[in-house]
Length: 495
Image 1: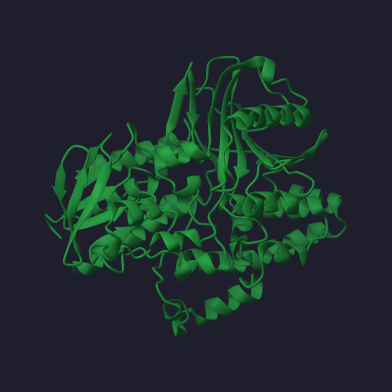
Image 2: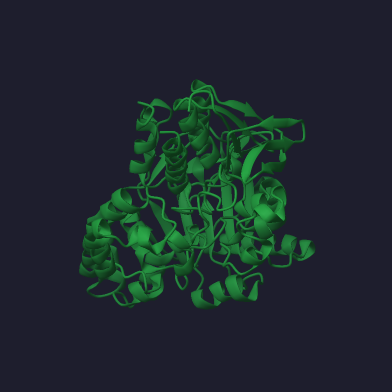
């Protein structure tokens, strides 16, 4: 491997994480990022004294971060400080109707019992079941590369698979799994909302992903002081410490392939040879735009048939004064959730009463905004590939802000100092995202594990893919895992 050249396309979390690992392992790595800053969807927006995290905002599954940094003899604390959030988040169901999910499991049991008789013990049983499979999934499955069903179903995995099917049958939807245990509509929404952060809905996400409930309730919710940009800075430091050459504002335009092997890339500034290429750019973009058709494992027809993850309207607000009735993480769940998800995934329309996520990081961090202000990040889930009406969208943004005023009892509109909207067309332009998807492919049953696009091209022998489209899937922790999978695949070839 000594001296072999690797080109990494894309400077998001998975690209940086892969580049650092390969640099550490002795490869000569060059990373190309099309934009002027690193981070991909985790870029930073700076304006009028505010510093917005543009994408990921939840820091969960800390053991994944710890394992990744340990590969370099480091700890997350070597790069940033974590603050525990307590309460963890607030859930609004309407005006003057909200509950807080606490850092204390006993308090959460009491809350569940208050909302549904017997639900406290049901929550305890659910967590007990998930505790039995969480380490199995984390230790045995998510760090493995699966390309065939036979890779998953083998003698060594049999006992673990039986436990998983017994405790969280993946043939059930997330909603079916939770509905068997709880009847309260409010409780079901609290337990099911994480499917949106996987890019899907409770109705198309398999029950096995309920392991996120365990991470939510039992592993604490953290915030890296300074924001998720601190994770990007940490990965950049690891890259530079391991001699990765980072080239910003240099998009890759074409992958050169000869005799089933990629020989290099052409960018806006020149041509570069490579022994291996790793793309952390949008998978569909790489396949259909950077490769000639004969070298595409997944053609345009393939992507047209897939269930894409959500897109979103992201609203960044800087406002005067403080917001008193909201926490760091806030969620609003609309009354008719089933209709809401139908409008997102089937109808591809603007939801009439959208569910919302509102992050106010200034509740935990006074370094990211001017004094006596609040920074709001608002996410409105939308369908990928929907037709965008720019005039209507501006009105819709005002409608969303009005909704937040209604449920929180706080004035927002009259206090806005700064506002920026980032929507589906921006995802396409900034990240080359297929049909403006925010998160790639949804985690449906037939788009999970070996049914996700492969980490290794089937037609180009030295081309690899990393990130949210591949195994193990969507989310910052999973992108760190994906990087380890791809680095190990390349290392295996050179042993």
